[in-house]
Length: 583
Image 1 (tube, rainbow, N blue to C red):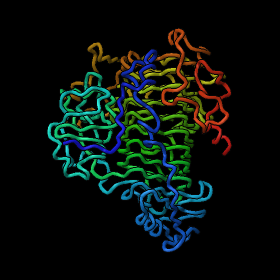
Image 2 (spheres, one colour):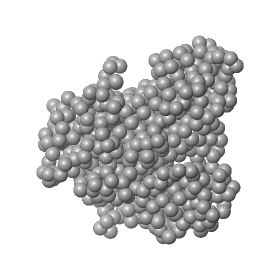
Image 3 (cartoon, rainbow, N blue to C red):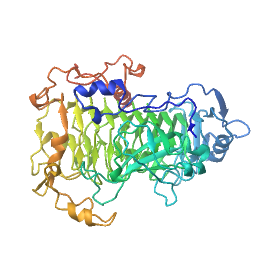
Image 4 (cartoon, rainbow, N blue to C red):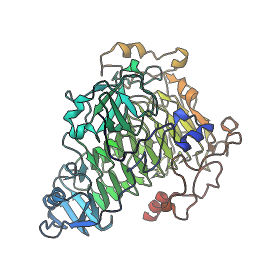
């Protein structure tokens, strides 16, 4: 018997035309299918047909919009009673909430304000502002979570997975059809997929079950990479989840909240979005996304983290999420601006990060592509930020693409530890293509010295140093591709899960980072152009790796804004223009 979602769109990661043609510079296996509204972001785009409005300030809800009394119970009641496709509307005013506005038990509704400058939500005590979280969250490792073994070694792009017997899915709503699922496997040490703490199943992708037979499940989007049977791949349905919930046109101000993780939190959700929302003055993390599939964060402002710069805080924290679209946002005074952990297949595009990521007098990381397990196949396009880093602290990462960004490596607050692109240990198969690196008026070196470097020097690249913050190695080298492993390698393999050498181990310089990184067509300010070693050889760069044409929200600004083939010196992205207008 077959079970399918009606009119389901099945997507393959290897047959997409733009991804395949781009292989003249970047090989196909390093790319993903990044089509907005199809594979990344809200499927079909953010809905425009939600016209029935429920005003929370009117009877029977009568939410206080003066900021004096707790408005959360009234807003929550309106959400609970809302029908599918309703808009729960918060008119102009200030809404005090002593506990979070929870959207997790509802699907297909929108909470909307009158605009970020008019509708303000003020969480108090230890409450988040707004959460989109189902009751049991997205913890895929619950002991009672269903696990289906994936057989027959499916390949990258496959959408039909053989799992033996699908009858256990009968215990889920609609026989499991529509469920978010996590696909994972044991660490592939040949890449390597590695965790210094020796945790297994560190490479993970989310997808959605859209069909099943007695022995197979059909997923969409398809696989980003092979799942060889030797690594014991498994499929875990997520249980409860939220879908097609939107937050729009308001501000969440955390001045009075001590909640450490998120003024807005999205967890175990499908096709949800946050658009034209200001999130400011969080205690630590401003916006947290975890276990999300095909969600969207667009035209937002994240800023003004209250706690001192340091670990366990920042602007956007994303964990174990796939095929999300993070586009055209401002991230300011957050440090780091983005921290991405164990996520795959996402697009981070045309976001502006300011130069305030400074800790201890050193320029910190603005965009950190991996501070957790193994992320892969993410696209970073058109962003402006001081530094891009894959930090290697908790584990490996691979197959991310950094395309047509401007990483200027500078700060108005410090002149120390300036590095444009910093790829630490365990980073593999990264594509750094068509970017602008550095800024005029400074002395730049192309790459850091092999043993260590001084913080007062300025570098275009740092490739292979042990982990974040380090300007040194122990003087030894590791290169697994040639059989030369870290001194801690065998100790890690012999340890119990979670008991490995940890982040302080593996202090050799990792030579395979540089060996596997594709550097092509990057204009840098050490050479004031593209160095001969990165020549494109006459190959023309694509305008975008995920957009077919210039987006309307770019207005009259040049697009694409950056690249060696552009007059880019005066170009800006829309998020940068908005940020500069705020000063």
